[in-house]
Image (cartoon, rainbow, N blue to C red; front, side, top):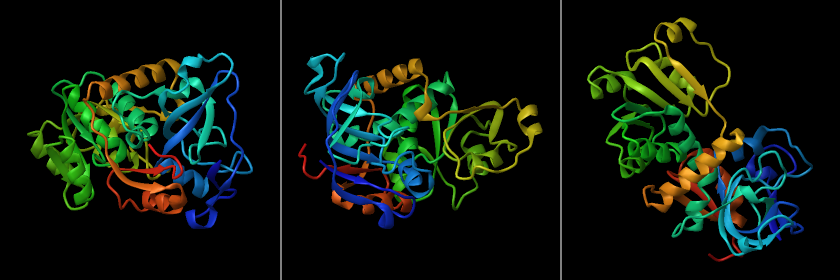
Length: 329
């Protein structure tokens, strides 16, 4: 089968290779999926750039979608031919979705809701599940002011929609016109350009001085500076899934006197029960037609270098997806 892989860390141009590798087989409890698409996420490019390799070569990407072609012992043969989306394809293993076939645990191949296209399905494993889990952790959002940082990002786009479905009044930060348009298309009415506006002042203006009671956050290293301001209300919950910087300082007293609750999570490392709940809930929202998807750019497998560079540059609003070139949808 055709696949892309790397054998060392570095730039996309210097490390990503294309060629032929052996098609895997479905083992016990596994399915073999003939991939239609592969999603490219920021974590994929970070892994390729700097994370130590766990095997001599890595086929990247954790997200994807395709059709089950083979089942291993212990898996119902009725699943053959099922359209599925994939989570954690390359997490903790060397064989991800930047290829024509992937064999993995049957639970990691989730039946696609009716009507969902393969490109959109390749956006669910990381962006979709991260957004759903972040909103779940927020708890009751009815009539609450919620700040979604990066509302035009892959996760923020989904999180904004989901928060509003659960009754939240969403304020989103954006850093470009394209991402602002994306967030607006998702229904976000209150947007703040964090590059040109004071986020604190705009939040206070929008909420009439109340501040936000919840933050769904993609960059805690920046958001931490808001915690001491009136923009973040007392007893606020900060649900965070990322940070551009990993080493920074903050004042404990700020968290204490405002009774601020911090919640951090890694979408790759959800417990089985929570994963099952999130997958089911996300699929239900899609099946009911309540969630929009945004595929910003589709590349071929031959263009995997350009796909990685597009994610790194941030020049596309919406998810970057690779269509496996020799497979037609």
